[in-house]
Length: 124
View 1 (cartoon, rainbow, N blue to C red):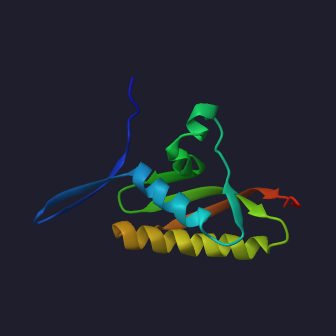
View 2: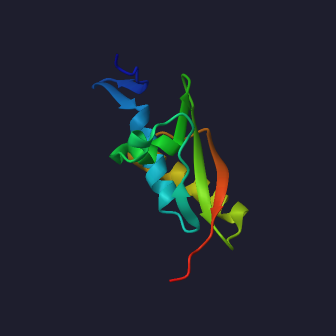
């Protein structure tokens, strides 16, 4: 049985464009992972170990909710120790909103950042 995937659709004079929610999730996950202070994306619940090791793991920590005119993005993160968590969260919100808007032309109505843990740095 295959998974049903949702798409965000645009229609104009030239035709229509359908963008998978998975695409938005990967864009958002990449933007979050590249933000300073983010240690890793936190794997969302209900996933098995095989899915976590796959190349799609960036999208596994991002939840996309859409309705007719808006997109809400939830991202789950582990931040580094000794960073200002609220500053990292704000930077992640800004990075995701800019990445999604520049990549697919959609401005998210909300970007919710969930800090799920803090990573302790290991001495070498």
